[in-house]
Image (cartoon, rainbow, N blue to C red; front, top):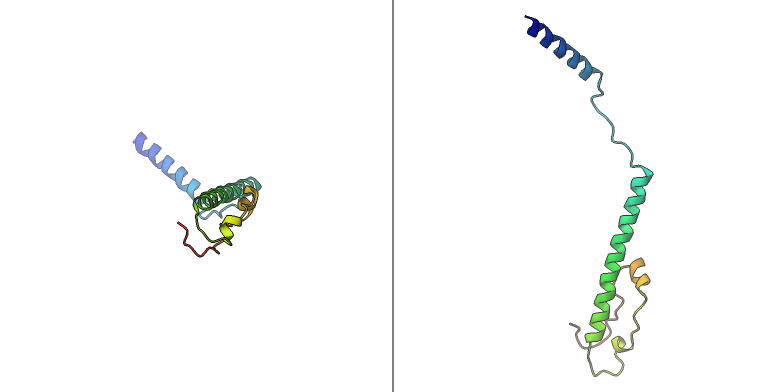
Length: 101
């Protein structure tokens, strides 16, 4: 009998606690620290992509061979790595008549 009474007391207390607990909690807004880290990660990803394009352009330009005197790739000077990091893309010209591989 004592155990049953104790059981109902605990059950009543837990039901009351559940009623007082908000049923729907709104998602909190991201803190400034989270936004700071998000921006840092975006910069890191942009830098990694820029480095990949930089190295790919460098390798392609070094491997490029053609006999065309006015080849834009032979005359091309590679931009600084910072330019690739700011806007990750290939800056290697596509003006050569021979195909690049």
